Length: 360
Image (cartoon, rainbow, N blue to C red; front, side):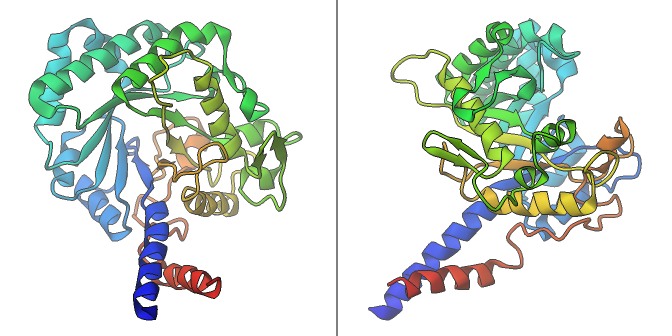
């Protein structure tokens, strides 16, 4: 009996740990002239137990390298292709046939992300009237090319759409963004797909260090920083994500429609190039985020699927700050000691199981 109970506790503890570790993926950008080959990158992912990858475009060399890896893939449609795909079903079917059906299921494509960070308030404003149409075209093409509902179609947004984010429970989209956001939310509700959100506490902190403390941004605040009704916030990441959940809840929907799940499709901290951008701060943020992803946010207490930006330092990015977000240097050496579930599982399991046993 005792042996069976202990075995059960170990299974629970292992599940608690690995679920959190495996909820974190990495964004694989390729804006560098000194990066390793796709085959080397996928081998690196395997060696580090990175089981989720975001691609910003359907690079066929990368997709070939991913065959048989079982790495979950978030496959992007670049902003430059959105208008073209929105213009006709023929264009969208061609894109799906060439870039998805040709590789699936050998490549575990889980999401198609139509556009990245399109917003009426940035240089992508001309795409806002085309995005929902492009998403609908791709969704229909995925189904009619024989993939059924196995691949979610979605898009990523950022915090420029928010009119209010403090306190998180009062989060709301800008009034002049609602014409753009509401149809997207309706589409995601109708197709049971998640919303992708790019979240960067670094930029909020670095632009306003007088109001936002570094510990609050780095998950190291010793006490509650924001008390928001029943919700307590010790870190800025949670507050930002929950403010978007609150904003979504303000958009009317049918009574039978479930709440949209948020996936954090980009987050990170630079190691150089700007205020507060140090190797130490970046390491602290990334380590704490990987751990924190296990628990979710105060508003949604479930593991939150999260993608770290980015795989490598990319020397062709601009401005200078954006060259320093990599988890690895181009020579594949890690900049930080991060655990994606490869080395500390047994130790974490033992600690968790011991805690459970001691409470019996």
